[in-house]
Amino acid sequence: MKDSSASASGKQMNHGKISWRDGTSKKQYWPLRSSIIHYIAKNPSTAKCYHKMAQSCKYFFEAKPIIIVPKLKYGYNDKSFALLCQNKWDECEKKERKCCTQIDLNKLLHKLWITETVDIDDQAYIPFIRTKIYRCEVTYCGIFDLNIMFDDFNFMTLFAENVCMWNASIKYNDEKVVTLDKIIESLPNLKYLEL
Image 1 (cartoon, rainbow, N blue to C red):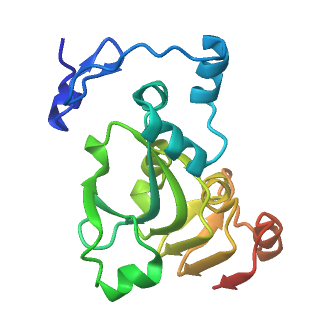
Image 2 (image 1 turned 30 degrees about the horizontal axis):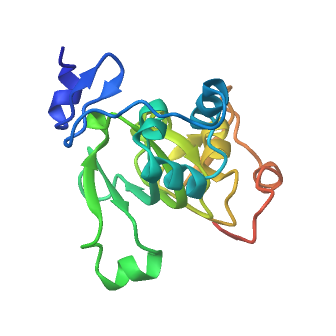
């Protein structure tokens, strides 16, 4: 039975299993109990560890389908697409962003684990982007020309060392503006803040 959203991306979903090009995944015989392996698959500790597990066995990706991406830029050229890039920032700038992959997040079936950079400049998509992100462990976060809720800001910047906000404001759920001291207090790893 095909899932209509899965067929749009070229993958067919079958009872929660991913149909692979070279055949279905095979049952694995682990030296540990299957409940322990299941826990490890569902609760990856780091992006690097998850990436190695998913490369070594399809089971880990099937159990927790996550795409690890160093950079996410959203809302720049076409508001319905995001740019994902595997390169470091300086490498990407040298290549004039030709190394980036443009993707429609509406059609994305899997969650993203972002490890380095997030740049966002579109107000309407902040709650939407948050639903597409599994974990955001970025060291740089750029927020441009928008108002952002404090909970969303904390989610995006928990690990951030560099935060750049231009023409942006952060508000609590009751619409009160968050003061600068509370913003700085919420950034435990902060080294550089540009306002």
